[in-house]
Length: 334
Image (cartoon, rainbow, N blue to C red):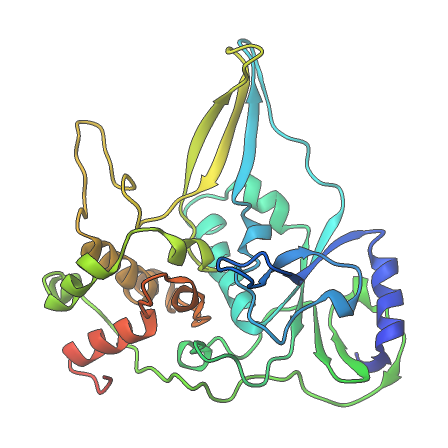
């Protein structure tokens, strides 16, 4: 079903949907950015289309909804444990095509990777996705090169115009909430980025493990882990046991985000530590994003959103890293 409707009527429909869903979209937080007098755009609950920010790139991805930065896995006492109650409401997430493709990567890791993660599965079953048309992307985007510019497997798609909203509604449960005029259109998609990459089709570890290009990152990378935290496809976590001060035999176990770039990530019993050099950590991440994941699942893990480039305090560009690697392996880039 394809229709158009005014923004006022669209907001009325959102109001009805709020009875059944929590609605998330990128939202502007003035003066909350990482530098003085800068804004922050991140996913948060919204009630109107005017609150949604799609003309600026969100600093964080909708990964925060699928996999919270910190979540309680269970509460424990001396004798028993209890898992947290499951949220009854569904979730409606407004996002762009590249970020929807990141959900596909998450599903591979948390639902199809030999076992299904119960916490992720319970949350994922209640989420519906609304694709927001994207025409041009941003300066650091390279979604076309990564094949994530074409939206797939969404429940509803919209184009936000100046005076109206165009809707393509595919989910039967959502159709009854929107009334408008029939209209033929296509969901906007990016045809070309400023950054174009020639990503190697197959990368073997023995061909890249000792390359000199990784040594550049030994000093440039400060191992802060920002690139991992803003990445929509970084899925690593660790666990923490929190003991309550009122009774140290009670507490909760939390799952929190982890980063392959920070010190301590590879620490093992017996004092073993792998990838001590920051450049080796960059190699590990690069292989994971454009090599190892593809060998297992058939497509690249990186979606080309470019958030890692935007967030790095040392201005390290992941797209430039891919170009350098392609050139060394005999491709045309750089």
